[in-house]
Image (cartoon, rainbow, N blue to C red):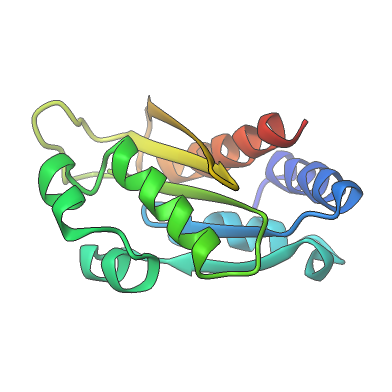
Length: 160
């Protein structure tokens, strides 16, 4: 993990701890990278509840209660599915906030309208859910790293 990622995780932890909030993560394309980043910070047990790594559509449905119909309509790489993942992480944890990532890290997997590097994010707090779609450049590792950073930055914006 880069120093920049660690420093961002520390800032996130300080912000969550200061507000007495617990975080849950729901990750697909990042493969648990956000959970790794935040649990590298000593004391994260006071602000990190749990992480779900739901790579397959079946896991998204069974672990996060993402409706099959939503995946069928929009595809697993969509803001709609990311929002459902974040909401599902909140519903299936003790967390106050959740973030979700779902995307195409590459080098394969592109579909029309969703090139390699497409990642959809969601940040949820209570009934409030914010989503965003980004297209990152670089190889698989670079897309995943940028996604981890962006996910944590979005959460910091939400709790600021």
